Length: 551
Image (cartoon, rainbow, N blue to C red):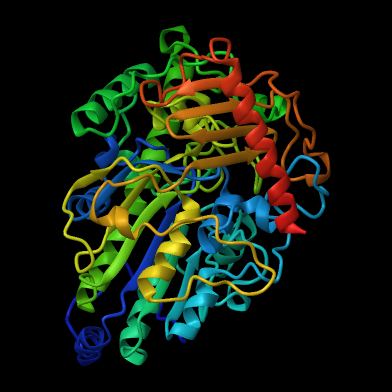
């Protein structure tokens, strides 16, 4: 497939091929699938989940479909992606660490067993054309795992051209104008649009599966200047007020009824880099203190970072809108199952990587390297507690929007059913008409099809959901949840140092009733030790089962 040059604008005129796509879809009636995933986006960032960031395209998907209020991910990017595409917990397929497992075999560098095929490979025999755009972060190459076309669009460690590439372009430019500006979010959407155009031109008689994985709003906080300007002074009142504002809107929308969590001023980033904090200058702080305790320099610096985070989400939503316009031009919106989610909660991390950080560079520009940090991450995860990497609700709760006009009559409805990213692959397979059997040597899929939930909130989809990431453990059974935090964790890119030990049977575990306390403010472990002991034993039992599955 030859991709067209990147262009911000495109014609919405219907070609003959687009009309052919409409005719073929009507004859075949197999749904198309568009799975859109954001990176490090908080539960409350989208307007339809209580946020103030302009997300009109996500909002229109929600208005024309469903919003799930209790949908979970795995707390981190690579395990969520493997779970989404496979239908298994990542530990079952060696794609996250596990106490008692071989560190080099499990984790970010783990390789899936041969039986753990991705949904893309399972759709191809059903006649689907399969596409991937954007971030990958799964073992193997996309085109070796069932994707017909893939473009891991990236030019460097951030969202703009890498420093070396920028120097090369500047030296080659003969005009006084700067070379054309590459921006990753736009490029990712452009590749998706090109794939859809090519599908309409050449494969109109086949349904498609498109996995659209944005890097935004993951650090480094890089955004286009005009996008930052829209939010320049929006966050000067601080994270305390922002959390209150978002929580109020969430209650009005029916997204949540739980009281707002308290800020944990003693909980900072999950990994310490004091020398890098110093490099970032006097405006950086690594704790979510009361906003009034910050000096003017700190307040301005933190508010600017949040403005860039918002700008990145705003731009992602605009690019999603362009993809939706292309679907509309193909007359494919009615029978395309579209879902949107985030891979984990917003991030409290603060670090400097890639091309480094120039303290004199404009915040959000290519030469800067900023991270959101725990203060505004707490606001992004409103009303929940903690952040990415933790398995408290702030780390594992995601917005989940489903839009499929031909398959569901729901318009603007909420779903309270507890569900998980492991359910996406089984849902797609079910709706595509695939067989649930998965071949010899494979355990049953951990996920369940969401088909009955699309019609109405019904019986529970899962009896329990299991969580583990970097020593953090959790188990939800009905409305009850136990959670245990690993207070001391190494930098995760060295799997050999990952914590692989188990805490004592009940030591340190917290117990929460999420029906009334989803913000996890009232630990009931001491009042109900028998429940804790039973749930911990079940967590251990599932851990051992998943280890056997992975062997």
